[in-house]
Length: 314
Image (cartoon, rainbow, N blue to C red; front, side):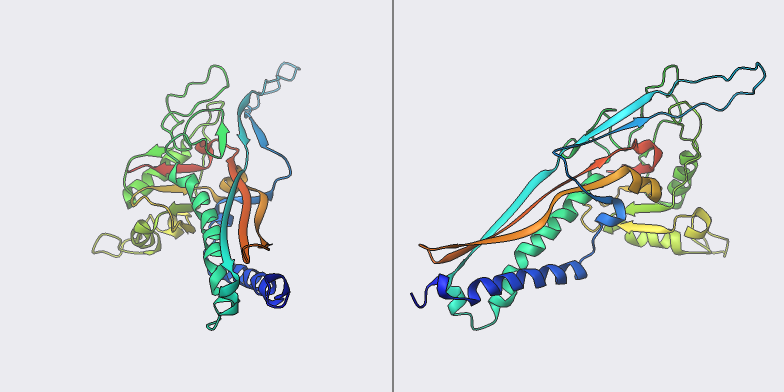
């Protein structure tokens, strides 16, 4: 039948081309924070599981003619399962036939692509949005505490957690708070109770803190004083060279120092199904249905104590 949906070769073709082009353009234009925070992996199982082993105490001197053996204690484990996300739209035959302004060549499908990519950014930001609470939406961690906590635990017997097991401050970001966090990181203790000497080379922050963070870290001299004294909180002096701004972090005051290498080792973005787009022609309604589908989640496989120090201000 001339004029039917099935006889219009431009109908499906326009949609396929539009989607592929828009995905490429949007990915090129967007700020993708996921690779900044996570190691990106592809999952091939229903769920993801990971466990941690503790550290060893310092070696003992060999004076008795017998090696002194230590038991290594299992620490905490992670379980994660990806979640599914979808979106759909309907395009009519009439819209295709009467397309006088080039809408069907791309603009019509941009919202679905943009929304899909935005969804991933929001989900990645959730890691920091919830760093001060126990969030089991994407994964569970058997310690049962937030990433940022004043009372982290150890499963190694006989180890006191009175000091050195906090990676939380309530201080607003400032040069003083930054220096205090750096010092506190040096004093964090491992599961055996020994100091880790943790250092941080990155800071994660929301847009509201951008001016202050850049001012503190990028001012080499004379910060907050009329003299040209060396700014001891500058990036050069502190080693904090990586500034990660999260555009979708809703807090105006929270912030976190991170060891970027350990952060990416600990934080995994697990894609079970990458964003994909499908379509189907409906014979009776003269409509084409477009849908997007993706399945993903993230997991943190290392106690936050050992790679981040967070400011929970609000």
